[in-house]
Length: 238
Image (tube, rainbow, N blue to C red; front, side, top):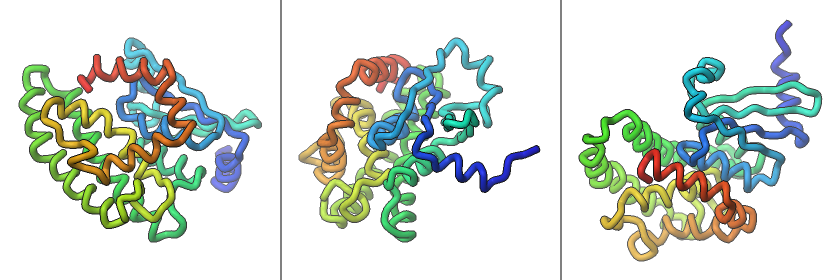
């Protein structure tokens, strides 16, 4: 017998759930999800998947890739959610990071989608490209994709008062997404600096604003975060 959607809805909203995120031992495409878990203050755990186990375990995931979020409930039922955007928005909704009304929510989704598209394009292309082709791709990425993203996001953030938020004056998943990818984009640029306090003050205000949060500061200073950063640089180059 298949459980009803309504019973799942009740289970998924319980404050007693533990969020179990399954992903590789690096930031990769899960940085925003992990940051959202940290900022939410809710119980969570990181289940780290070894790269060597991936080919065996990928068939056990909903779509053959990670991250996957498992909601572990007090009654013993585990509910599974895949796809980065679905996970991010689910956690953001639970934690109040999706705005105050339907218009704010959809504007937040708009900015979130823009940053997600940029960063997934970068990561997927690097992973799938032969190493000898990566320098040329990165040059195109910096001069076209990243340049456009910077131009438009700096503009929109300035229109909102350069207050460190995309929408209004409250933390949203769009803010968290941008803050979680900034260090990687800066590393991609190398000596060709495109993101800085001087060049992009409104974008950097998003990063600075989240860094003031004690939970986030503790997470970034943790050994696990530093290990993820080292693995990220080793595997992706940024």
